Length: 126
Image (tube, rainbow, N blue to C red):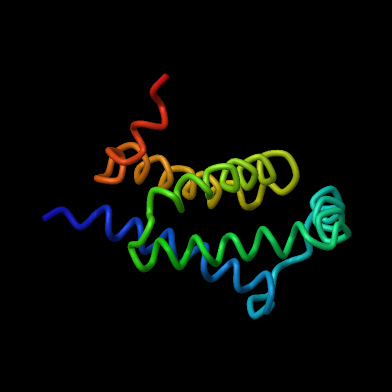
């Protein structure tokens, strides 16, 4: 039995669960972001809802991935978040670009090249 999808799913789930929790509890120190990135975060925080919603979504999807429940749903919900993470690092904070690429690669692997791909295939039909 190929364990690669399970390893990727658990790693992916851990990343989103831990970083989602960190958004609320701040247990991991983060270096000060570049000015443009700080402005972006400030705007998300000023809405009063967006940042908590984002982090709660990451936690819930992380739990789904870790438990192996509703994995295709978690992958679909996380796809735009990962795209935003990629563009955030591409344009505002390049130091985290490698991690954004890794997240994108894991998402693509799980969504298109793992056993979960069969469940997602109907989303791409006309």
